[in-house]
Length: 203
Image (tube, rainbow, N blue to C red; front, side, top):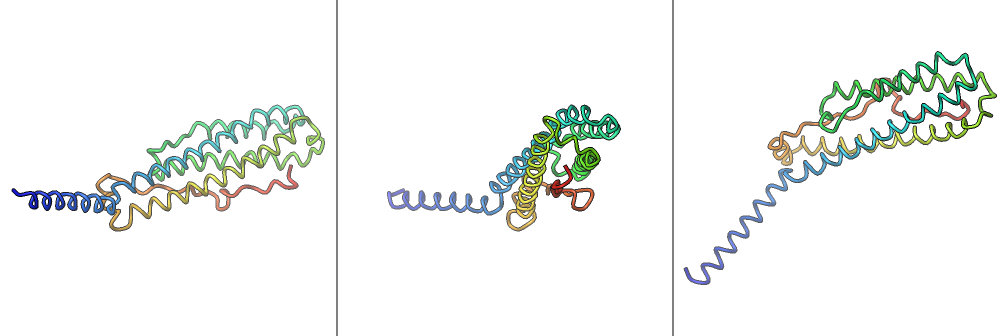
């Protein structure tokens, strides 16, 4: 084989490899796992935000116990709901399981509702606001509810992007090869519960 033939052969192989690489990229071989990892990262943020809200409860318990003995029943409900909410975990491999997601969402919503009942009940006890630590708790809770809302929004956006990738041609080819399934967005069991509550005037 002369030099010209060798050069043409190398060029042909290079073009073939390049074309193959481009075809694989177009089929989602690389983009699907990239978007999948983005969803998992956003879900980790959601879990962290909910955990940080749960971590506020021990401080709340100390404040309320010292202020309103008659609120023990509601406080007990908050603590029990917190225990349930923190016991149900959805790891990154379960994001394509709607049943597990619904269980997690229901537990978090129940916790949020029990916390909301306690916050509303303290309107009857105006002296509570003067107790050391209460204002700090109020500020922390408001910030945390907003963080939860933002992380859920970011997670759902990543899920939408990923699900579009695995459902459309030609990237659906790569998704099929990898066995990638659509992932479940975070949707509140009660409509509107995923929105941070307006605590103005309630605390």
